[in-house]
Image 1 (cartoon, protein in one colour):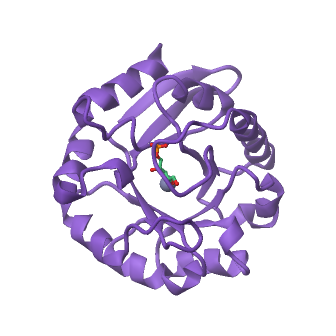
Image 2: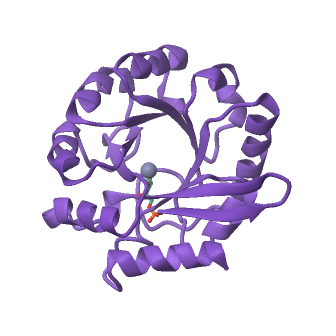
Length: 232
Ligand code: DX5
Ligand code: ZN
């Protein structure tokens, strides 16, 4: 789904929603991806965790391959792994469209981003709450996506860290002043109470896990509520 909101000084912005399947029912993952697609998702966000960069252990290339036939939407693969360069080829082959690596996990960040482009994917970098935006300064021209983490990565259902709203606004300024067209994603604790603040700060893609996949409502109802919170 794409929402238009007016942002002061910058005209209408297209806001994209990327449901994170981390909170989905893994017993019927394909169906949940279809539900998100039909509810108007723009991307399907796939959280890859290796039990080393973050304590949790989740999805590998086989699962990406498994959900690939369920949707034509871009698969937005967030690699919370050490040495992501070892897995870039496998995820690309499995059907990933966007590969987002964690800045903290890359010794040779520039090289990894080149590698992602070489395998035909869009390249992104995620930045943890405790990491300065300056770590990506030198690679901005290579980036299709900047992901500002609004929680410490590893688990769904955490509370958004309030200081990250101002961080998103600072990142927005850096992108605008440099004339960079990278999408600005936020991930973690995004729900109907926080989404609007992130959009006002300049985010263009909202990742949401537990706000979209939960046992209180259908995926379509949840997506509608998130959309409504942006339009309010
Ligand atoms: C956190 C993951 C997120 C997570 C978000 O480490 O990167 O994508 O699924 O979950 P919520 O939206 O529940 O905070
Ligand atoms: Zn994520």
